[in-house]
Image 1 (spheres, rainbow over the protein chains, first blue to last red):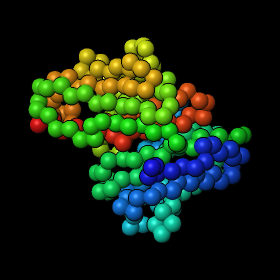
Image 2 (image 1 turned 60 degrees about the vertical axis):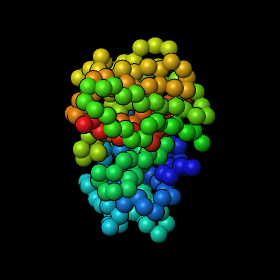
Image 3 (image 1 turned 90 degrees about the vertical axis):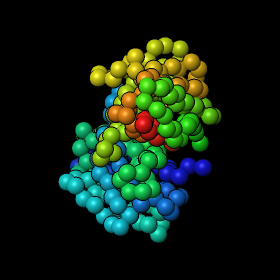
Image 4 (image 1 turned 90 degrees about the horizontal axis):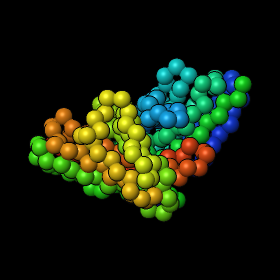
Length: 113
Length: 116
């Protein structure tokens, strides 16, 4: 059974608007969560992370929100830009930043000019 | 949903030996499989891309004679770390694509290699 789920395979957003990418998890032992961005023909690049002791982490246009009771996290991109078009992967680990990563399937974001 | 299985999940070996890691797509045909290595601060480095029945395409800086990748069938790819060295100790992850347009990748659980 999948421990990290990204239920939306794709998302289309207009440039300048907010993009919200969602991720659900089932393992309550996860204590560290990450978002990766992947362009075609490249490996995923780290975007932003959050520890389970926090509920929000912000880095520029990117904010990750964590709702532990709902076992849900989301990535907000504001404002969205065409260069943000990529596949976004949610990942989680047990044991903080040193734990092995469990990935979701990814959500393809398309930002239209 | 699509499942990718990696085996073994953890392996400890002596320096100089070779270790094989398997990546299997359990319920779909993976036309392309990717191998990554995890580095500190959670960065993932793409090591190589393999297509079934053809030679793997290695990223710059990855030694193809050291990291042997075989994609013999549409459901199995293997990574063999030859003459393992302590610096090869890392977390190796595979992912597989069915070739559908959406860019979805299905990741394996990863394999933690420790070379003594």
